[in-house]
Length: 247
Ligand SMILES: NC(=O)c1ccc[n+]([C@@H]2O[C@H](COP(=O)([O-])OP(=O)(O)OC[C@H]3O[C@@H](n4cnc5c(N)ncnc54)[C@H](OP(=O)(O)O)[C@@H]3O)[C@@H](O)[C@H]2O)c1
Image (tube, rainbow, N blue to C red; front, side, top):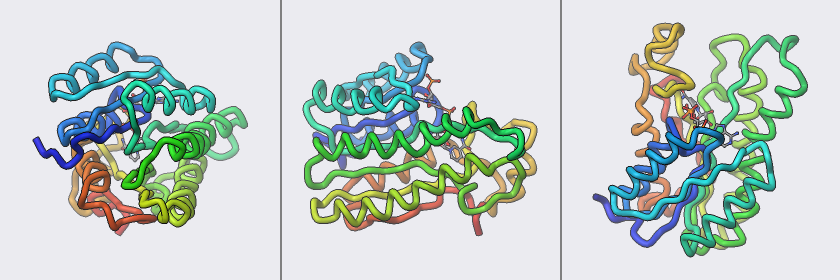
């Protein structure tokens, strides 16, 4: 175990499965107590709680739909209240709605912007009330914000691109409090959202330089670095963990 996050407390949105679960577990392995949100799959969330506890850290799973701003703010307050402090926020939960622009509905637009843009804003707003010097806000964007190789990504890519502005402007705003804000843009990552054996996987692999998907742990390693002591002088940055998808 790396103890670089000893005595720290983290909140990860969408931590019940996939990248968020890997981030929650890695932060715990590095020494942090971890709260995370999930949408509806309590069984999977409970499994992540058990894994974090096995790593020797405290864990809380909070059912909170990121589309509901009151639930997002309440999750921040509950994590801080129950775990005693809040040093690290990872805005990971995402809505992934694709389609030709003329077929995307306004409801899909509202859902995507609510989860991918408003929730990171609201969580950041709520967390800065609790966050001490040395705090970290890490947003999870997407490679497709920088390189659109397939049609159908207009809404999703637009929403993820908003995180660049949030990351830079908030990094500037919170720098005086020694809080850093960074953006991690995963490339194709093997999760239930985008399985490495899915129908488009071969084509997707071909767009990367490394020729294969990331594991969720690959993305979590970068998040943990930014959250840890090594990330202390990095703020406003975008880190692509995409196997060269965007080069
Ligand atoms: N996988 C990729 O290739 C890839 C690439 C680039 C970027 N990303 C981004 O990485 C992030 C994680 O993706 P993933 O592939 O790990 O997804 P995933 O495997 O589908 O996992 C999603 C997790 O987030 C939770 N979640 C989903 N919608 C939520 C909501 N509205 N409120 C609260 N929690 C919610 C889910 O909860 P339940 O378990 O309760 O359903 C689950 O725990 C997303 O922001 C995604 O856009 C992924």
